[in-house]
Image 1 (cartoon, rainbow, N blue to C red):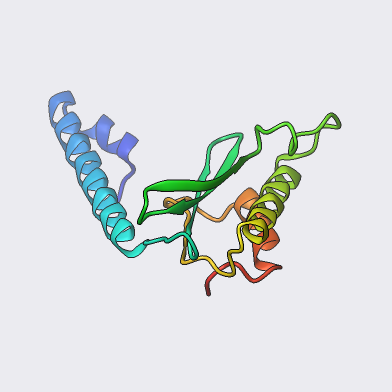
Image 2: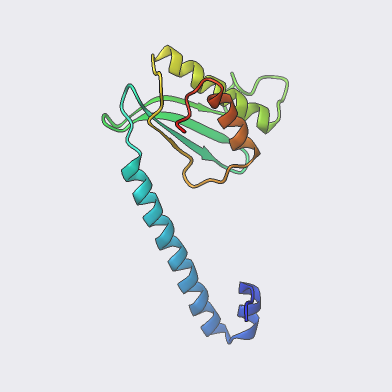
Length: 144
């Protein structure tokens, strides 16, 4: 018998349902932290081949080129910057494309020919993330 968490909460007594829900959340958190540790082990950027790290919140998109050997951020771009979010308001998808173009331009200025890894931080490929990826993939910076 499969049921949702809400149905489980209604079927069982309060303390038992809370205990089961806590166990489910704890398991989910442990699995996610293990995945993150494995990803951090794999992602290793240098000054000539940096790691591209992307964070996508509910409204904004942040991207940065990271040199893991020297523990420095080489370049940072987000949809909050005035150069990307100009006077005529653009949609979040257009702003994500502009962030991707800013990253590509920075790679050319810093003489970076390729990116060691693309770190999405576990975020799904939604519309904004896809628009960002297309802008970068056009110039061949995404590792495939």
